[in-house]
Length: 433
Ligand code: GLY
Ligand code: MN
Ligand code: MN
Image (cartoon, rainbow, N blue to C red; front, side, top):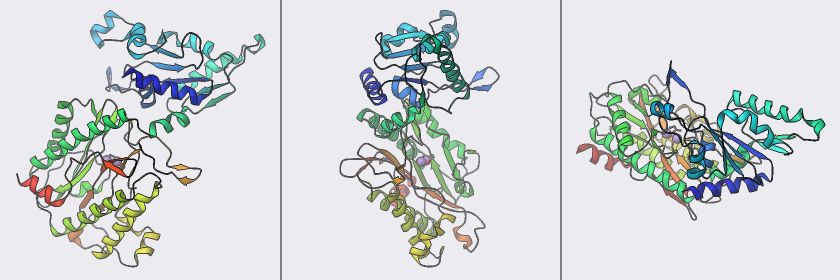
């Protein structure tokens, strides 16, 4: 396990071509008075260290004689560990996390300026943490103040993300395996939701099935707050109140995925609360399902990022015309984005340590080409709100999103979330039981 992380650090250092990289983990946040939110490391830090304690900073110094990977972290403290849990300590980060050298986090202000002396550039992700940004400037200024002694300060602060996020975008086998595992657990929860769902339940009762299965199967957290949205709530894209009652005749949209060792699944399914699609629900569902398939059919190395979305909006527009929800010529309606009334988001995003993962979507102003190893979501939807102008009432309050997690392979794609049913017959069959 450690080797994968050592390899990633080596790769980053090669691309840095000298300089120093400084990567702080996330800050702890107060939830209420002296109670903190559960801690989660920052994704960049975790990607390079696999270390999950708060108050830690990784520093990479290519070519440093006494070791290139330095970790600042909390020291062992028997009294504190009795209250707040175990710590790796300085020895632990060297022994278990592969650090070459470790220092107490409380000493960072004294040590980092020395590491910056006579280094041309610093790699750092500016803007994520104001307090840390200004500390870095203080350190750089401290080195600048020594100019008369012949010491030079870094002349450039470069965005570490430029290097790191390109690496994070193309997943290694072990990363894909973690996303696959997160997908399997999440799909199981989606199946369970279909099995237990019935009119009269509350949205939070369905959410509880997800929380239970996620934890039971070893997930630390949901990858994002689960969306369990029935009726009109399904037309609110990121609805997370999850308090309403499920009504006979309404649709239910669930967007929920768990996190496994930091990696996210992001899966949406939509189905009728009573287990039987009405004619209108079926018609719209079939459009979204066909749009998703059309989008997926474009996925292979060399396809540009915009192609799945383009394929999806064409199928959606054709379907809306067929059912009288849009009137006019397909090309024209696609051209003027008339579908946006009912389909207002994009067809997907990168997926990884962050649910909306890092990585540029355009390169030199052109949509990026897909490569083997990239992992993305494919998630078209249709949302018909109550009162939608010129739309017959029978279509109102139907919100549908079908979202799968897809890995680009050598010749095409692989659906990692395949275990979550989405064919109408399969859903109705599962819900009947
Ligand atoms: N769960 C948020 C999204 O689908 O992008
Ligand atoms: Mn998504
Ligand atoms: Mn989602």
